Length: 323
Image 1 (cartoon, rainbow, N blue to C red):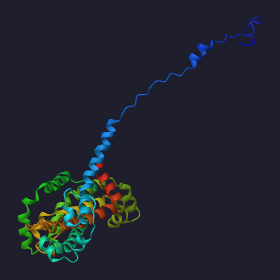
Image 2 (cartoon, rainbow, N blue to C red; image 1 turned 180 degrees about the vertical axis):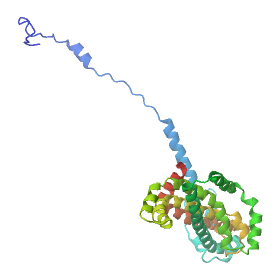
Image 3 (cartoon, one colour; image 1 turned 120 degrees about the vertical axis):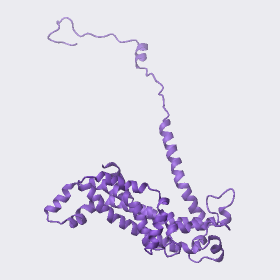
Image 4 (tube, rainbow, N blue to C red; image 1 turned 45 degrees about the vertical axis):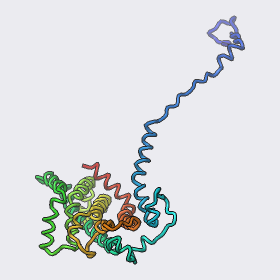
Protein backbone atom coordinates (compact mmCIF):
# COMPACT_ATOMS: atom_id res chain seq x y z
CA UNK A 1 0.00 0.00 0.00
CA UNK A 2 3.02 2.32 0.55
CA UNK A 3 2.98 5.68 2.19
CA UNK A 4 -0.32 7.46 1.66
CA UNK A 5 -1.67 10.48 3.32
CA UNK A 6 -4.83 8.68 4.45
CA UNK A 7 -2.96 5.86 6.22
CA UNK A 8 -1.35 6.15 9.60
CA UNK A 9 2.46 6.50 9.40
CA UNK A 10 3.09 3.59 11.76
CA UNK A 11 1.49 0.96 9.52
CA UNK A 12 4.21 0.90 6.87
CA UNK A 13 4.03 -1.41 3.78
CA UNK A 14 1.92 -4.55 4.04
CA UNK A 15 3.31 -7.79 2.59
CA UNK A 16 1.17 -10.82 1.75
CA UNK A 17 2.89 -14.08 2.62
CA UNK A 18 3.81 -16.19 -0.43
CA UNK A 19 1.62 -19.15 -1.29
CA UNK A 20 2.96 -22.65 -0.95
CA UNK A 21 4.49 -24.11 -4.04
CA UNK A 22 1.93 -26.86 -4.41
CA UNK A 23 -1.04 -24.51 -4.28
CA UNK A 24 0.59 -22.12 -6.78
CA UNK A 25 1.08 -24.90 -9.27
CA UNK A 26 -2.47 -26.11 -8.80
CA UNK A 27 -3.81 -22.67 -9.62
CA UNK A 28 -1.82 -22.43 -12.83
CA UNK A 29 -2.75 -25.90 -14.08
CA UNK A 30 -4.69 -25.78 -17.39
CA UNK A 31 -7.67 -28.08 -17.44
CA UNK A 32 -8.22 -29.51 -20.92
CA UNK A 33 -11.89 -30.06 -21.74
CA UNK A 34 -12.50 -32.28 -24.76
CA UNK A 35 -14.38 -30.44 -27.56
CA UNK A 36 -17.42 -32.10 -29.07
CA UNK A 37 -17.33 -32.17 -32.91
CA UNK A 38 -20.72 -32.23 -34.55
CA UNK A 39 -20.90 -33.88 -37.95
CA UNK A 40 -22.87 -31.60 -40.36
CA UNK A 41 -25.22 -34.28 -41.61
CA UNK A 42 -27.57 -31.76 -43.28
CA UNK A 43 -24.75 -30.15 -45.23
CA UNK A 44 -23.33 -33.52 -46.29
CA UNK A 45 -26.77 -34.71 -47.38
CA UNK A 46 -27.26 -31.49 -49.35
CA UNK A 47 -23.92 -31.93 -51.15
CA UNK A 48 -24.69 -35.57 -51.91
CA UNK A 49 -28.07 -34.65 -53.38
CA UNK A 50 -26.50 -31.84 -55.43
CA UNK A 51 -23.86 -34.18 -56.86
CA UNK A 52 -26.46 -36.87 -57.58
CA UNK A 53 -28.70 -34.36 -59.35
CA UNK A 54 -25.74 -33.04 -61.35
CA UNK A 55 -24.82 -36.56 -62.46
CA UNK A 56 -28.46 -37.20 -63.34
CA UNK A 57 -28.34 -34.23 -65.72
CA UNK A 58 -24.83 -34.64 -67.12
CA UNK A 59 -24.42 -38.41 -67.51
CA UNK A 60 -27.09 -38.91 -70.25
CA UNK A 61 -25.60 -36.12 -72.34
CA UNK A 62 -22.09 -37.46 -71.77
CA UNK A 63 -23.19 -40.94 -72.84
CA UNK A 64 -24.70 -39.59 -76.07
CA UNK A 65 -21.51 -37.67 -76.86
CA UNK A 66 -19.31 -40.68 -76.07
CA UNK A 67 -21.49 -43.03 -78.09
CA UNK A 68 -21.35 -40.73 -81.11
CA UNK A 69 -17.59 -41.39 -81.33
CA UNK A 70 -17.89 -45.20 -80.94
CA UNK A 71 -18.26 -48.02 -83.37
CA UNK A 72 -21.60 -49.82 -83.26
CA UNK A 73 -20.07 -52.95 -81.70
CA UNK A 74 -18.53 -50.93 -78.85
CA UNK A 75 -21.77 -49.04 -78.19
CA UNK A 76 -23.87 -52.18 -77.68
CA UNK A 77 -21.19 -54.16 -75.81
CA UNK A 78 -21.99 -55.57 -72.36
CA UNK A 79 -20.71 -54.22 -70.02
CA UNK A 80 -20.67 -50.85 -71.78
CA UNK A 81 -17.49 -48.84 -72.24
CA UNK A 82 -17.90 -45.33 -70.86
CA UNK A 83 -14.89 -44.06 -72.83
CA UNK A 84 -14.54 -44.71 -76.58
CA UNK A 85 -11.84 -47.36 -76.99
CA UNK A 86 -11.38 -46.72 -80.71
CA UNK A 87 -12.82 -43.23 -81.35
CA UNK A 88 -14.06 -42.52 -84.85
CA UNK A 89 -15.68 -39.69 -86.81
CA UNK A 90 -17.54 -41.96 -89.22
CA UNK A 91 -20.88 -41.28 -87.54
CA UNK A 92 -20.54 -37.54 -88.20
CA UNK A 93 -19.02 -37.89 -91.66
CA UNK A 94 -21.97 -40.08 -92.63
CA UNK A 95 -24.25 -37.03 -92.58
CA UNK A 96 -22.16 -35.45 -95.32
CA UNK A 97 -21.74 -38.57 -97.44
CA UNK A 98 -24.09 -41.36 -96.26
CA UNK A 99 -23.41 -44.84 -97.57
CA UNK A 100 -25.98 -47.44 -98.60
CA UNK A 101 -26.07 -49.18 -95.21
CA UNK A 102 -26.82 -45.97 -93.35
CA UNK A 103 -29.49 -45.09 -95.92
CA UNK A 104 -31.24 -48.41 -95.32
CA UNK A 105 -30.93 -48.48 -91.53
CA UNK A 106 -31.86 -44.85 -90.94
CA UNK A 107 -34.64 -44.68 -93.50
CA UNK A 108 -33.03 -41.70 -95.27
CA UNK A 109 -32.81 -39.93 -91.92
CA UNK A 110 -29.04 -39.62 -92.27
CA UNK A 111 -29.23 -37.72 -95.54
CA UNK A 112 -32.11 -35.56 -94.25
CA UNK A 113 -30.36 -34.48 -91.04
CA UNK A 114 -28.38 -31.50 -92.50
CA UNK A 115 -31.53 -30.12 -94.15
CA UNK A 116 -33.56 -30.59 -90.99
CA UNK A 117 -30.97 -28.71 -88.95
CA UNK A 118 -31.18 -25.83 -91.40
CA UNK A 119 -34.98 -25.88 -91.26
CA UNK A 120 -35.04 -25.95 -87.47
CA UNK A 121 -32.61 -23.05 -87.29
CA UNK A 122 -34.66 -20.92 -89.70
CA UNK A 123 -38.01 -21.72 -88.08
CA UNK A 124 -36.78 -21.28 -84.50
CA UNK A 125 -35.03 -17.98 -85.27
CA UNK A 126 -38.04 -16.57 -87.11
CA UNK A 127 -40.35 -17.70 -84.30
CA UNK A 128 -38.18 -16.03 -81.67
CA UNK A 129 -38.05 -12.73 -83.61
CA UNK A 130 -41.78 -12.68 -84.34
CA UNK A 131 -42.61 -13.50 -80.71
CA UNK A 132 -40.28 -10.79 -79.53
CA UNK A 133 -41.90 -8.10 -81.69
CA UNK A 134 -45.49 -9.02 -80.85
CA UNK A 135 -44.85 -9.66 -77.16
CA UNK A 136 -42.92 -6.39 -76.72
CA UNK A 137 -45.88 -4.27 -77.80
CA UNK A 138 -48.37 -6.33 -75.80
CA UNK A 139 -46.23 -6.50 -72.65
CA UNK A 140 -45.50 -2.76 -72.77
CA UNK A 141 -49.22 -2.04 -72.94
CA UNK A 142 -49.95 -4.27 -69.96
CA UNK A 143 -47.10 -2.83 -67.90
CA UNK A 144 -47.60 0.89 -68.65
CA UNK A 145 -51.28 1.36 -69.52
CA UNK A 146 -54.14 0.86 -67.08
CA UNK A 147 -57.37 -0.31 -68.66
CA UNK A 148 -60.34 -2.32 -67.56
CA UNK A 149 -60.07 -6.08 -68.03
CA UNK A 150 -56.27 -6.24 -68.36
CA UNK A 151 -55.90 -9.04 -65.81
CA UNK A 152 -58.75 -11.02 -67.38
CA UNK A 153 -57.10 -10.68 -70.78
CA UNK A 154 -53.79 -11.93 -69.39
CA UNK A 155 -55.52 -14.95 -67.87
CA UNK A 156 -57.17 -15.66 -71.22
CA UNK A 157 -53.72 -15.68 -72.81
CA UNK A 158 -52.56 -18.32 -70.35
CA UNK A 159 -55.73 -20.36 -70.80
CA UNK A 160 -55.01 -20.64 -74.52
CA UNK A 161 -51.62 -22.11 -73.62
CA UNK A 162 -53.28 -24.75 -71.46
CA UNK A 163 -55.20 -26.22 -74.39
CA UNK A 164 -53.43 -29.46 -75.45
CA UNK A 165 -51.95 -29.38 -78.93
CA UNK A 166 -53.60 -32.64 -79.95
CA UNK A 167 -57.00 -30.95 -79.55
CA UNK A 168 -56.30 -28.34 -82.24
CA UNK A 169 -53.91 -30.15 -84.57
CA UNK A 170 -56.63 -31.32 -87.00
CA UNK A 171 -58.33 -27.88 -87.35
CA UNK A 172 -54.91 -26.28 -87.70
CA UNK A 173 -53.96 -28.78 -90.39
CA UNK A 174 -57.15 -28.09 -92.35
CA UNK A 175 -56.61 -24.35 -92.01
CA UNK A 176 -53.04 -24.54 -93.31
CA UNK A 177 -54.15 -26.78 -96.19
CA UNK A 178 -56.86 -24.31 -97.19
CA UNK A 179 -54.24 -21.54 -97.36
CA UNK A 180 -51.75 -23.74 -99.21
CA UNK A 181 -49.15 -23.51 -96.42
CA UNK A 182 -48.51 -27.21 -95.79
CA UNK A 183 -44.85 -28.20 -95.83
CA UNK A 184 -43.70 -24.59 -95.52
CA UNK A 185 -41.79 -22.56 -92.97
CA UNK A 186 -44.69 -20.16 -92.48
CA UNK A 187 -47.03 -22.90 -91.21
CA UNK A 188 -44.55 -23.89 -88.52
CA UNK A 189 -43.71 -20.30 -87.56
CA UNK A 190 -47.37 -19.36 -87.12
CA UNK A 191 -48.13 -22.46 -85.05
CA UNK A 192 -45.10 -22.07 -82.81
CA UNK A 193 -45.82 -18.37 -82.31
CA UNK A 194 -49.25 -19.19 -80.91
CA UNK A 195 -47.62 -21.55 -78.39
CA UNK A 196 -44.85 -19.27 -77.17
CA UNK A 197 -46.58 -15.87 -77.30
CA UNK A 198 -48.62 -16.09 -74.03
CA UNK A 199 -45.61 -17.05 -71.89
CA UNK A 200 -43.44 -14.50 -73.69
CA UNK A 201 -45.92 -11.74 -72.85
CA UNK A 202 -45.92 -12.73 -69.18
CA UNK A 203 -42.12 -12.77 -69.02
CA UNK A 204 -41.76 -9.34 -70.62
CA UNK A 205 -44.69 -7.80 -68.72
CA UNK A 206 -43.11 -8.48 -65.33
CA UNK A 207 -39.72 -7.31 -66.50
CA UNK A 208 -41.03 -4.11 -68.09
CA UNK A 209 -42.68 -3.16 -64.81
CA UNK A 210 -39.26 -3.11 -63.16
CA UNK A 211 -37.95 -0.48 -65.62
CA UNK A 212 -38.24 3.00 -63.99
CA UNK A 213 -40.74 5.36 -65.60
CA UNK A 214 -38.33 8.24 -65.02
CA UNK A 215 -36.20 7.05 -67.95
CA UNK A 216 -39.09 7.48 -70.37
CA UNK A 217 -40.07 10.82 -68.86
CA UNK A 218 -36.50 12.10 -69.23
CA UNK A 219 -36.48 10.99 -72.87
CA UNK A 220 -39.74 12.83 -73.52
CA UNK A 221 -38.29 15.96 -71.95
CA UNK A 222 -35.48 15.70 -74.50
CA UNK A 223 -38.16 15.66 -77.23
CA UNK A 224 -37.82 11.99 -78.09
CA UNK A 225 -40.82 10.35 -79.71
CA UNK A 226 -42.31 7.08 -78.52
CA UNK A 227 -40.48 4.89 -81.03
CA UNK A 228 -37.15 6.57 -80.37
CA UNK A 229 -37.70 6.29 -76.61
CA UNK A 230 -38.43 2.60 -76.98
CA UNK A 231 -35.47 1.94 -79.28
CA UNK A 232 -32.83 4.10 -77.57
CA UNK A 233 -33.86 4.08 -73.91
CA UNK A 234 -36.40 1.45 -72.94
CA UNK A 235 -35.34 -1.63 -74.91
CA UNK A 236 -31.60 -1.41 -74.01
CA UNK A 237 -32.52 -1.37 -70.32
CA UNK A 238 -34.90 -4.30 -70.84
CA UNK A 239 -32.32 -6.34 -72.79
CA UNK A 240 -32.08 -9.20 -70.20
CA UNK A 241 -35.84 -9.75 -70.34
CA UNK A 242 -35.83 -9.64 -74.13
CA UNK A 243 -33.06 -12.24 -74.29
CA UNK A 244 -34.90 -14.53 -71.87
CA UNK A 245 -38.10 -14.27 -73.90
CA UNK A 246 -36.28 -14.85 -77.20
CA UNK A 247 -34.44 -17.92 -75.89
CA UNK A 248 -37.70 -19.34 -74.54
CA UNK A 249 -39.42 -18.91 -77.89
CA UNK A 250 -36.40 -20.36 -79.72
CA UNK A 251 -36.35 -23.47 -77.51
CA UNK A 252 -40.11 -23.93 -77.88
CA UNK A 253 -39.82 -23.96 -81.66
CA UNK A 254 -36.64 -26.06 -81.72
CA UNK A 255 -38.03 -28.90 -79.59
CA UNK A 256 -41.58 -29.10 -80.97
CA UNK A 257 -42.42 -32.41 -82.63
CA UNK A 258 -46.15 -33.03 -83.15
CA UNK A 259 -47.07 -30.03 -85.32
CA UNK A 260 -43.91 -30.47 -87.37
CA UNK A 261 -44.84 -34.10 -87.95
CA UNK A 262 -48.34 -33.22 -89.22
CA UNK A 263 -47.52 -30.06 -91.18
CA UNK A 264 -44.34 -31.17 -93.00
CA UNK A 265 -43.61 -34.07 -95.32
CA UNK A 266 -40.37 -33.32 -97.21
CA UNK A 267 -36.93 -31.93 -96.53
CA UNK A 268 -38.22 -28.51 -97.56
CA UNK A 269 -39.61 -27.95 -94.05
CA UNK A 270 -38.91 -31.03 -91.88
CA UNK A 271 -37.28 -30.15 -88.56
CA UNK A 272 -34.72 -32.10 -86.58
CA UNK A 273 -37.16 -33.70 -84.06
CA UNK A 274 -39.13 -35.29 -86.93
CA UNK A 275 -36.01 -36.57 -88.69
CA UNK A 276 -34.47 -37.87 -85.46
CA UNK A 277 -37.53 -40.07 -84.90
CA UNK A 278 -36.88 -41.79 -88.24
CA UNK A 279 -33.60 -43.34 -87.07
CA UNK A 280 -35.54 -46.11 -85.28
CA UNK A 281 -36.94 -48.39 -87.99
CA UNK A 282 -38.50 -51.83 -88.13
CA UNK A 283 -35.28 -53.28 -89.61
CA UNK A 284 -32.69 -52.05 -87.14
CA UNK A 285 -31.55 -49.09 -85.08
CA UNK A 286 -28.06 -47.69 -85.46
CA UNK A 287 -27.44 -46.19 -82.03
CA UNK A 288 -24.15 -44.47 -82.82
CA UNK A 289 -25.58 -42.54 -85.78
CA UNK A 290 -28.63 -41.63 -83.72
CA UNK A 291 -26.33 -40.36 -80.96
CA UNK A 292 -24.40 -38.23 -83.43
CA UNK A 293 -27.65 -36.73 -84.68
CA UNK A 294 -28.65 -36.02 -81.09
CA UNK A 295 -25.39 -34.18 -80.45
CA UNK A 296 -25.88 -32.06 -83.57
CA UNK A 297 -29.42 -31.26 -82.45
CA UNK A 298 -28.29 -30.14 -78.98
CA UNK A 299 -25.37 -27.95 -80.09
CA UNK A 300 -27.29 -24.87 -81.43
CA UNK A 301 -29.51 -24.27 -78.36
CA UNK A 302 -26.59 -25.07 -76.06
CA UNK A 303 -24.38 -22.49 -77.76
CA UNK A 304 -27.22 -19.97 -77.62
CA UNK A 305 -27.69 -20.50 -73.89
CA UNK A 306 -23.96 -20.17 -73.20
CA UNK A 307 -23.64 -16.97 -75.23
CA UNK A 308 -26.53 -15.25 -73.45
CA UNK A 309 -26.18 -16.97 -70.07
CA UNK A 310 -25.81 -13.80 -67.99
CA UNK A 311 -28.67 -11.90 -69.58
CA UNK A 312 -30.81 -15.03 -69.59
CA UNK A 313 -30.42 -15.51 -65.83
CA UNK A 314 -31.03 -11.82 -65.15
CA UNK A 315 -34.16 -11.77 -67.27
CA UNK A 316 -35.69 -14.92 -65.80
CA UNK A 317 -34.88 -13.83 -62.23
CA UNK A 318 -36.37 -10.36 -62.74
CA UNK A 319 -39.44 -11.78 -64.42
CA UNK A 320 -40.04 -14.18 -61.54
CA UNK A 321 -39.85 -11.70 -58.65
CA UNK A 322 -41.29 -8.50 -60.12
CA UNK A 323 -45.05 -8.25 -60.03
